[in-house]
Image 1 (cartoon, one colour):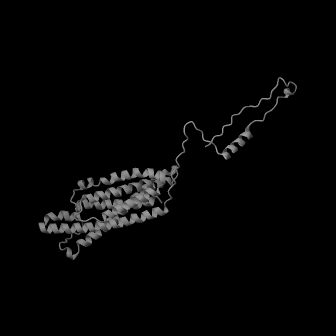
Image 2 (image 1 turned 120 degrees about the vertical axis):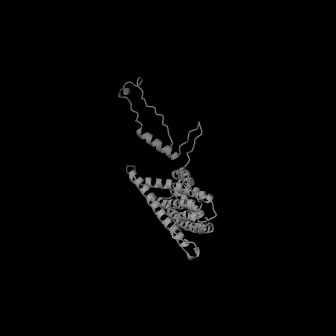
Image 3 (image 1 turned 60 degrees about the horizontal axis):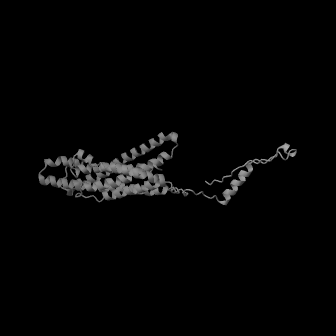
Length: 292
């Protein structure tokens, strides 16, 4: 069961990473190098989320960090669905931080669940399943979210009311960026504005689909993953110089066991003829009752 949240989290997150990379270049106008640099908040947040999830998983079990992480990812996609053409890079930074924290927690705890479900001698199988689920989820996420984005963008760009739609403009927003410098200023500005609105519409639709997937996955994980473990009880400390007193039942049982193993006292045969010189010696035992 731990592999399913990993696959669906990868479906949502890596599909969104593909979409926001295009958004950074096509809508915000960054170069490929600048766009790549501006996706760095995501891996940093992933690392922080993974480190924070491990103590929670060790204390409470994998279900809590997995479900909490998926809820955070869902909230991040809720933020992404509110994106408009006037929003700047800050909107994407917020998305990357929230989604990265949640995805890191889900990935770390989900990996623990997958590896804990196989015996030690088959750890390679668990690792392969873990990697395969992520790769399948990531590939499907790029394909599905990219298809949604392309469909919405192409539909809006090729409407008759768009006015300035051209075959190249309907392909992608990056094609519009390349086409705009060859057009008159007023026409280029109108075409860019239409392309940005169309692209952002596709982005919000794909984010809504991904957020729905992560929300359903969080509900399923809360229902089917193993229940949280009870936290370990804190050890009771005994003040220095004091000994814990055993309860009556424990002390009685310990005394009875000791009586069964203590040797019986025997008198040497020669003592009957030489009473003054003989004595019956009984071994001395110090019985210590210990409590665990």
